Image 1: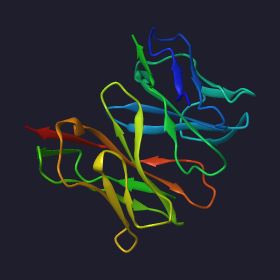
Image 2 (image 1 turned 45 degrees about the horizontal axis):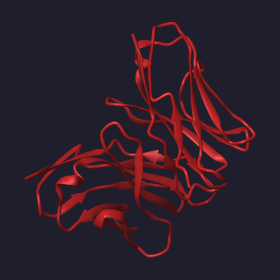
Image 3 (image 1 turned 135 degrees about the horizontal axis):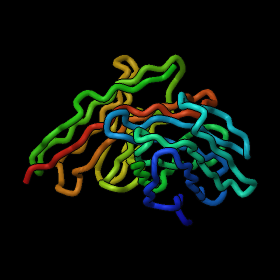
Image 4 (image 1 turned 90 degrees about the vertical axis):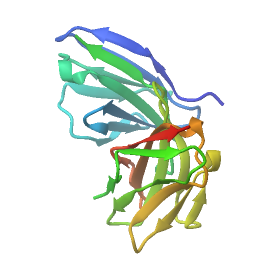
Length: 113
Length: 114
């Protein structure tokens, strides 16, 4: 069974631009969560989608948004990029309604210049 | 609310020595607990999980962890460190009552000295 895939793996953007990251979960998984990982803040939860609905949201500004499609694939969008948005963005998928465990993708490394 | 504290952001052990990475949690409901490992430039890989079955949990690569409710701890151990164990380790907690959010610790970087 294929794992969680994220595209692109690396991205360089300029401050003020917007960016869209993509995540394809493991087949059959309906929950997708997004995390931001930085050296200073560690792993911070962005949001979680289940069956195309945002079920949970972390403490990030509205510039960070996401969505999930009917095939469970998810996208994350960051508008008006700031230098502080430079991070590794991780996507994780889970099977069902209770998070027994999450499976992580390799991440997208976003650099904002 | 749940939270996780990992004591020691950096741990160094000699090859062949015992590995002990500490994790304490706070949870208002019975928790699910996890240990993940992250190698450079990669995502997180599940090492092991506790979901209210046996309190001693065995994972991959010879790691194990013991859930101690009285101490609110879930420390990760491995009897003999290998060079390939050098990585970042994260402890995480989620709710067992239908919650859907993981709370991660700040991570412990393990260095194995040859």
